[in-house]
Length: 362
Image (cartoon, rainbow, N blue to C red; front, side):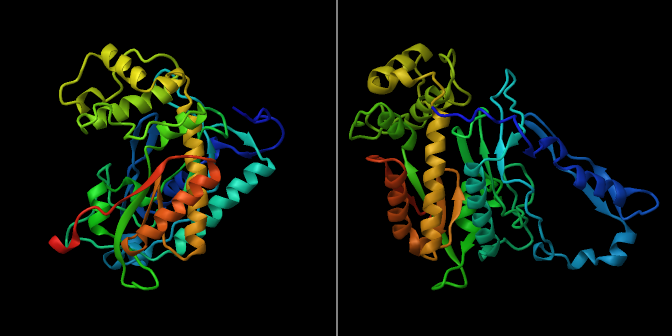
């Protein structure tokens, strides 16, 4: 697996320790008693998996300059991120990964420009949030859905530009799944008023890529459905992907995996059955190859987003899928398949469409 060996040599472009300092300084000045614009009620932080959002309350002096009661989301502008390519270390024993300083290369500049171009398209994209009257839309963290959060960052893992690479930070990514289908609308040339979305995604991509890596054709069946009847599919999917991402032999159930089985087997029995049903790729279990497979997936998605833009199809990336207007879903499916074939030659992975709920029954 190729890796960059000059990450820490030469002049650095990105220093993670300075990120956020300007924001903190601004809050400090506005909350200073001699300025008195805001009450710095809660200072935000992020430590490992724990985080807390900053909370500020406007004081009368602030409202003299800005009529708070008239503010809407359209009143705000979000500055683009200083850096859109983020390199993280491998996770430590506590599951935390730190951001790494790195040096620019021609390849990184090309990848950075891809994300910058994507962010410019997302900034101009007419995205409509249909909000229930009087009720705020809350994301997975219980925070208001903020439609100004459109700029994405591409995050790489394990100190390698060939591991990970998924896109993060769009507001639609933290919305609950059903909320996206019910309240998110995308405007298009034929439907300027906005239309409901469809989720077009790569189907069973990680196991397909693992078989491709092993140069063996995968079985012509659902690779996650080990029991052949759809029963416990979610649990087998989680266990299979955990085996591909694990570095070393799994010694216990991954988080929430056991609960995904109706009647969970013993852990060792489950692993033995998984290795038996996927014998051609069992040698990849515990090698951590899942991060490289994710890089292949994210690269194919970047190409697909370019295809969609060229055809004027509005699209929001969602990890291993795209959200598009329902009327454009079939065309988007064809373009994702084309991107997959371009990036992973002879790939047999499929693309599926999820339309969510039936609007006509609402």
